Image (tube, rainbow, N blue to C red; front, side, top):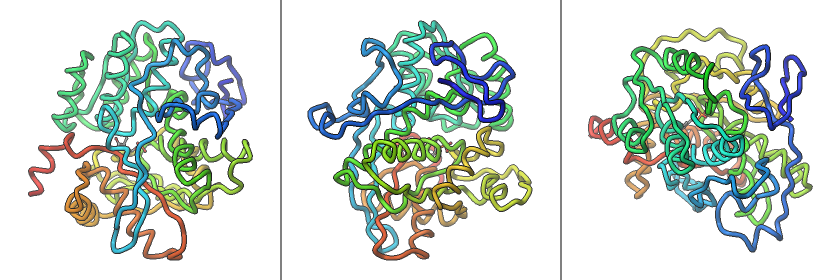
Length: 366
Ligand SMILES: *Cc1c(COP(=O)(O)O)cnc(C)c1O
């Protein structure tokens, strides 16, 4: 069932919709079943949690065997943290989690064309899965997006629209196009979160079905914040874990509207460009939901400076992890969080995107 937290209206999941009749944001109510013993005999991808993903028929699954990325120990500021290698996905970022489920749903609904907007990586992911599903695709991006991501979107065969101005201007252009098409938005379309939630399942399974004490994730539009919250809630509902890990949400200091909101302050967008282009979201549409997830988990928001992002980027790449600058913001957040927490706490985080996507940006830093 789709439902609106605001109006309490409900709609069938078989509707071709991505928002409510009065335009409200929708969430999904779905009883996810997780069977640890069944997973063992299945392929190492996110579809091993088949009964937890609301796609009805297997023949509609659009997949590159994505997911079940390695969870490995990485040294960050002298301490060891377990990091999911989500930079290793087919399109180079964790967005494939959401795109696989969302585009499977589009296929199930018989959708002929999708539109989407992003600061790059979600566009790459949706374009790749649209290519695989043979669904037409139109992507809107800010014109200052990393050229590597633009090339990737076009090579997948999507129609690329470069929009001058801010990320919000891009969202407006896509929103207009979405009135006549299925909106495969990672912000609006709640099926995306039914994919990103699998990161919680995988972490738990890779820890022998235990929950970590905390998970550190980026917070732009909150696909991982909300995804992690849904995923760990599902694990609790299935009696696999008993306690929600703290969700630690990282923003760039140059663009930290959620941190301001959570502290009850008004956010003033100075419009300064951060190295972390993937989380430079001044007006996240699910802001209330994101803050609710962080608060209900007992977590917190942390912001990081441009210099801290740069230091973390160098620290990671010099250990052989070639991640994109946006990913380094999360690691800078891990580093900050570590300085204030117990040394025995089990903390997990992730590398969100591959450095090869941001060659031009990284060249400028050398
Ligand atoms: C999308 C993205 C993020 C941030 O995710 P949100 O859903 O916007 O919070 C972080 N890192 C990378 C590499 C991304 O592509």
